[in-house]
Image (cartoon, helix red, strand yellow):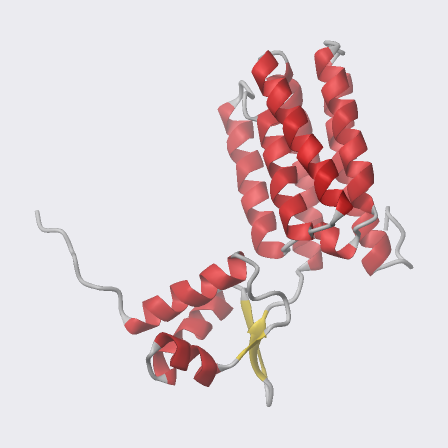
Length: 225
């Protein structure tokens, strides 16, 4: 059985280059993708770059506008809302199911991460805050005893990565509240609170972030619109 060791095509290289920069938030929503500039940087013609952009358009990461060209797709508000609502339900359950299995070291690690989040607040970096925020939550839900729920939680976190670089870019005032709520969830876990109470706290935590975003982006709609 032979293994295909051929080098990736130019269009594949361009695709991976651009996608990495979108997912890594180097190219943020609305960033204009100039064919000639990308082609020059990659040392190739514009043809494979154009093919790569069309492939990324099919994945909804890039948008083409007539007489303007290509740019990184803007925020998918509907997709973001659905993912955050799903994550609130799923992660609430996963955190509750994980709570009794967390070790002293797990709790200490989560608290260290939350301390780092508090430090980031002093010189706010939304991207760093988002990464640490995800790490904090992962510690709390990763010992969930139901692997299917756990898979769904990880899938929604990954989906959020495609939809938005950082909610906290848009609602930085939400970040200090989030850190305080983290401590509240940790306290409930340490005190062996009823699992339903832990689940509710974790779910409300996500709901509050979603509501803050909706109030910022669509103030006339209200949090329950």
